[in-house]
Length: 172
Length: 172
DNA sequence: CTTGGAAAGTCAACAAGGCTGACATAAACT
DNA sequence: AGTTTATGTCAGCCTTGTTGACTTTCCAAG
Image (cartoon, rainbow over all chains, first blue to last red; front, side):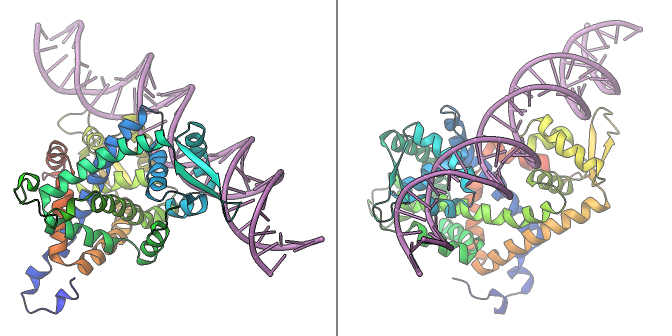
């Protein structure tokens, strides 16, 4: 973990090359293109089911933490309950998600993927993992470590912590 | 450059740790959160002008290559001309973008930022660069190199080349 | 010089997925 | 008993994407 490259004795210009406006701008653009490209394949699959990216996100996080409460999911996704409810209702009606009344708090609904929900999740995550794995193995372990380090630094620490605690452990 | 660690004779789990499903999944999620977090600040600024992310993208790429033709912009953004035309018309009407008839081919429109367009571009890119620079300098040069390597590997080579040639040189 | 087709603009209609506001219900908490 | 919380739902709005159809402009080939 780099603490302060600015204090090193190496020539200033060389050391800060990665922080020039041009380098930064390239990073921003690459992030834009990579993100768009990365989501395009799942988007195409979802069309066959008449679903969109919003459904994908719900399916992903319900699979990620089975038994997730609606409130937690709202917090993770950062959308309104009305917006979430629309896609969630479809997924429940279509039998991809099972919404069970909470055992301890009966106001809550705990969300689980059904068998067909799990199947779609697998179909979607397979293509994304395949693609990410291809990029990872082309780039190599050190690059992947750097990739993760920069992404981590890009996320607001407060947000990152909240997400971590929401997605941590205790399934069911 | 890693070629194919899967074909190596070392079934060493350590070597492939960065390619486990769990590692991949973490990368996917971090990309999601980082991208969303990264775009949230410009989005808030744009609200003050009653613009959205679509306007931001247009402003960005017109600034990136002044004199860009509408067709080129369509190719970069990957949306329909009707969709682009809506936001483009607003920006032209509001005097942020100057649409000049092409000198060599008078069917084409070459797009330029006006003074106020440049001002908004600066306002938007300042916050993004600031944020990206913060992440970059916290992560360090090696991490940044890795970040860029992975992103590069994530983008379809064909797409990457097309974008490169569209955005290259010859301004005006 | 005419005509085919490319580039651009526009109108209409629609869909996904955001948003707000208002309201209902059940359960938990105090 | 009364308040708060978790969830669901209805209605309506906005942005930004889509398709289809049509026009105008204008380059370039026959």
